[in-house]
Length: 353
Image 1: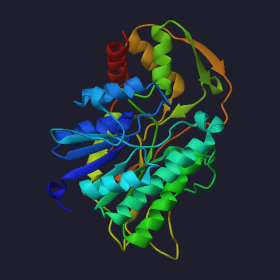
Image 2: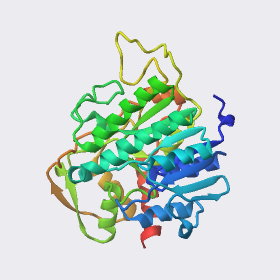
Image 3: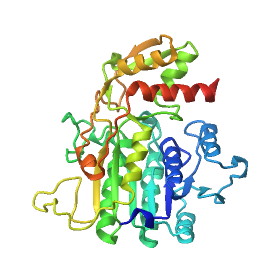
Image 4: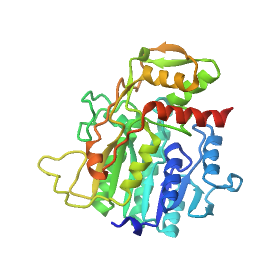
């Protein structure tokens, strides 16, 4: 596929953290981007509206199922569970590529609100697949998660590790997405690439994530909780590296009959159909307390830490093997943690002080 041929990309979850950054990069790179988001209240909708405003939209004009258009960009407030209107959008816009980032996020939220994950992450994704079936696209890229590795301690995590032991509904829904995409690639020839994101952070990040929570508490001189007594590590991945990877993947749709797939010895990440999975992480896990110290350095003050035991549904460590993705796109995340945290803190202070 020729990158210049691609004209129009649907980015679902465009008012979200990664979706906002991806839309900004794709528009800058010459793509026509249509964004979709339901702007729900899982966290403060004003942050989502601020992201859309930064993309150039007049947020006062947003209303349900109404397409707002500005130069090379459009936005529609729409819920993916609304199949009729989602299909109408596909019919009218004739997308070349779809990047599905819309999902109900959060591990701990899923312990109290499991039905939301079925609605948003399974029914919503099914509606994306059905729309791609009715109005074919050249490539569907969809967000999975490092949480699918669950109980596995085979680190660094490789795409072909067993992922049959998820620890929460969020992880289970992302595992389901991978299997659903494979079935549609098989039945309806939809080229699908799934991306297992590893702890994405950076400017405009979600307020329910550790970086935002820790920074907010330090700025306000309040106590904050660190779980498992701080004995945790994460493969923190800077959002700029994430969206650069997605951009590079857009013209590289998988093809059928992958010679690396052996049906007598099948692996998770490849298929005889046009389907593939990649880890997308920094390949360099960071101790949680080092992460806290990076925030303290960026703010120039010490945090007031309250150590707590491990939370249900959480894991002690994540660590991505990203060799397959690097071999495919000749790029791997490399942003220094201190630089990434500094960029977040600067944006946080602009938005909140």
